[in-house]
Length: 209
Image 1 (cartoon, one colour):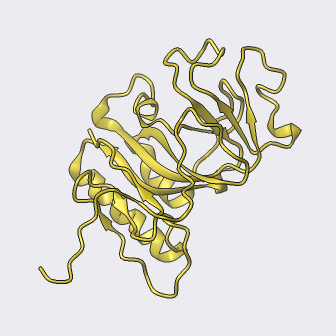
Image 2 (spheres, rainbow, N blue to C red):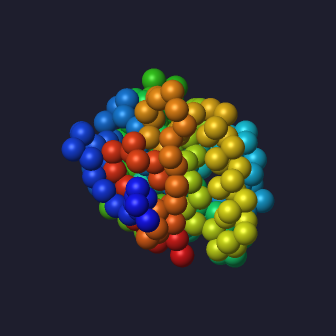
Image 3 (cartoon, rainbow, N blue to C red):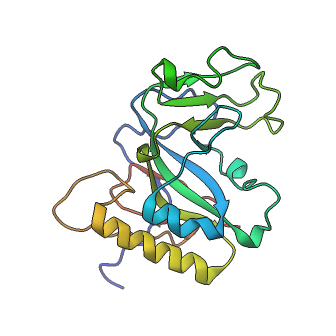
């Protein structure tokens, strides 16, 4: 059809802020990350934001990862049919690397002026048996949900995406971070089904299974 553009993957000529899981995040940047949750929590997260956990390997905060396969492991002991994995944009603020057991700032990084803690992949933190990187964000307002990356129930996925679109209309486009007077032509990637905006610097297709 004339005038119709179909998007799959691309990388803009502008400087990209994409980051592989092995690269150390730079303070003040915004990165794509993922979070796995139970489907019963998904609506509340979209409408009201994340509630920080009261504890964990890195203490209090919202646990996320640049590795979607790690996010797919959570929540633990949950049927995959009841799982949702969110794709998010995360403003990491000031980042502290935690790369060994019993690190002196392992659970007190925020009290020492950091906004996010990062465990590199294949670090000396024995609790991360998968070898995949992990991040913990102190302030949930630094996290913007932009898509439902994984949800086995197609109807539920469509409903959650519809709710996300409603939030975007009210708060602006969270996918690209570009301010314009007109609404952005947000649509589904024809290959992987992710929600994408043509103003994004980069889109890399990920499996939705």
